[in-house]
Length: 86
Image (cartoon, rainbow, N blue to C red; front, side):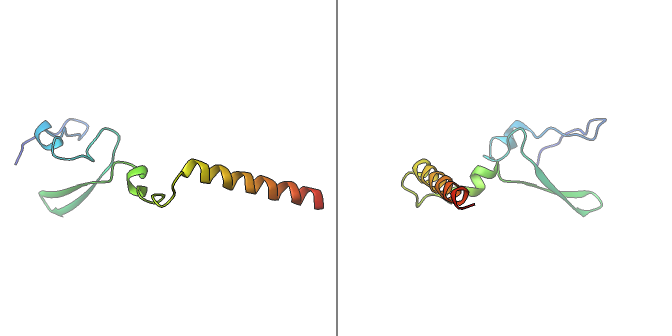
């Protein structure tokens, strides 16, 4: 267990030894804190970002950029045909 000091603004610095063991503990990320009892708190690191949370979502796409461009082009064609009929 590491000991840290609470700043006047109630901030703490997570020791380097502990930071080295977490891939998600990086500047800008958030943590959840839960009070367990009067003197005990549980700190859980959230996932590093939305990209990591969504990783694998498009893994079945062979070329995601091409698929997105094709979808955009199809939508533009639909809009053009709609404008012609209006």
